[in-house]
Length: 158
Length: 293
Ligand SMILES: Cc1cc2nc3c(=O)[nH]c(=O)nc-3n(C[C@H](O)[C@H](O)[C@H](O)COP(=O)(O)OP(=O)(O)OC[C@H]3O[C@@H](n4cnc5c(N)ncnc54)[C@H](O)[C@@H]3O)c2cc1C
Ligand code: FES
Ligand code: FES
Image 1 (cartoon, each protein chain N blue to C red):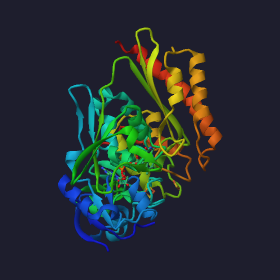
Image 2: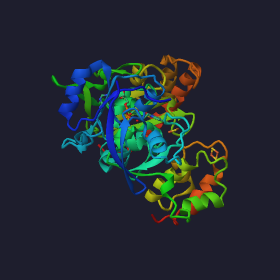
Image 3: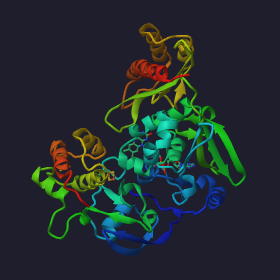
Image 4: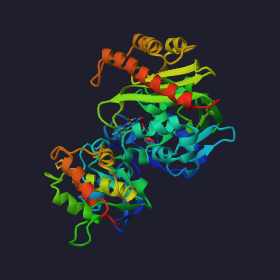
């Protein structure tokens, strides 16, 4: 037995209405229903942070939420960071500091850092390390990511 | 890695949620922050026929100080809200100190107080903290409300006294007495991981800085958080000197009977349980000495 529900969500400023099965996670909904595949899925059980997005302004793991739970919510995904061809300061900093290699973890780190800097625009290095402790990266060794976030700190206006 | 199908309800009012729980009982699972339940659904370790999502019950998200200095926290208060609450920091700094040890900020943005307590992971911080503080749990069903003392709430491995038809609605923390110091210490593999072992303590001092009352609770070393009664008795009448604390720590090491698993061996847990007890007691004494009667 399964139930279907009509939901309305605003993603990166655009409104969508869809019929979803209750068991579909928000991450799968974004990727499969809305074709917003920037949000990545690593572990699908809350451990790796790759699926991090903003739900009503707060960083959450989209694999650990149901799409039906986002009914009426405002979401921001990695696709919503850049302004046209102009990268968001965080994205630019990641590029400058070589903070990505394969890029699998990057959307999750960007959205985590985005939420973190909004709250703490001038963080210390220790605070940055603490903030990204819930995100896993198998390539970079984290140091370039810490540097990138520190570079972007202060430049982030939105 | 995808949840199996289920029927989904998102009640708007507590009574409506209770009726659903009454109707579906064992078949249903309450969904709060989802930070433990969603992984279980995705891994198909849980396959409930019905999900009752309580996130719309905003009435259960409160944090309230009582006139007598006690604190009441609604089951749906997010862990992050509790972490940031000025009221919690002043009325019950032990809870405030425990919050950052829970997972990561993205987890705490969703995870709730009630969810952590109802889930009752043996390595979780809040169950141990609530046992230390002798908190009271309020649960409700269509038949009415009852309060359960922390010592009767945690029954075993991930098992609590909540009946399938009941909803945890709030926890009540009694007012802190004067000259009480507290501490929480844990060792985890990585920042934000569940503790391999942890200790929560409270000491109450009398006028000449002698311990007249204490709690020593160990978590992550058994099926549920547990007070170490012999160590508590040993501490009674003691002042904070190295010899006394070493003796109490030794009692904790001796009395723990943990399991070995992929995270740590039983020997390690016993040894570290003792070390953390000593550290926690040192900090608790220091805090208590700063408190004026
Ligand atoms: C990567 C990661 C790391 C974590 N690290 C830690 C950690 O270090 N320490 C720690 O303590 N926790 C940790 N957690 C778990 C986290 O704290 C969860 O938020 C918590 O265990 C469950 O709370 P929830 O609100 O998310 O509940 P849910 O996941 O929604 O529910 C958990 C269980 O409680 C039941 N339940 C929830 N609310 C109620 C209610 N009001 N009445 C009756 N039953 C209810 C549900 O039916 C379910 O069985 C971690 C989680 C993750 C994913
Ligand atoms: S995919 Fe969501 S935390 Fe790993
Ligand atoms: S860049 Fe490859 S996992 Fe982080």
